[in-house]
Image 1: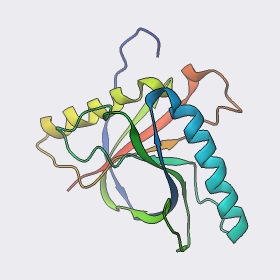
Image 2: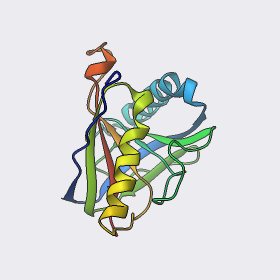
Image 3: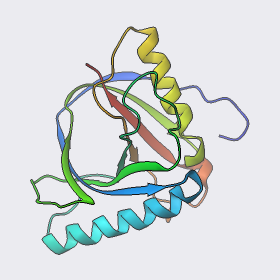
Image 4: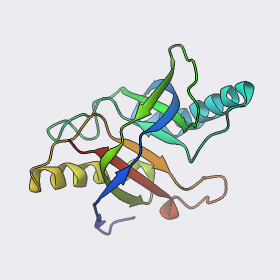
Length: 166
């Protein structure tokens, strides 16, 4: 992304509810990338042990953001839920969570570039909600389309940011 301003295209898509398994983490913005990598490895290992493969790319839920007035990025430390979508219902105990992403109308945009500038996508969604007189339904989440192992250039990373609409 660099110094050029990013334009976000926001679409309202219809989605089915999606089950997920996540690990709750708390980290500072500086620790985010290393903490998320560790959490994803831990959840992947748990899924491997129970024989439940991920049903899609990794994701991160952001419980500190629920409304269009909430601070973006949220105050540090960040409290996040990091993991994978799954097909089947699984039992989990804190700090591991089994849950379901909402179905229905989902505001969606794609962020291209470093993760440290991802908050601009959230701001774009908040502005979109306000401009279209929409209310979010719960917390937003990120879907990581790019694996940094296979694409080391962070300027080429792609992350979907989604937020259910009431």
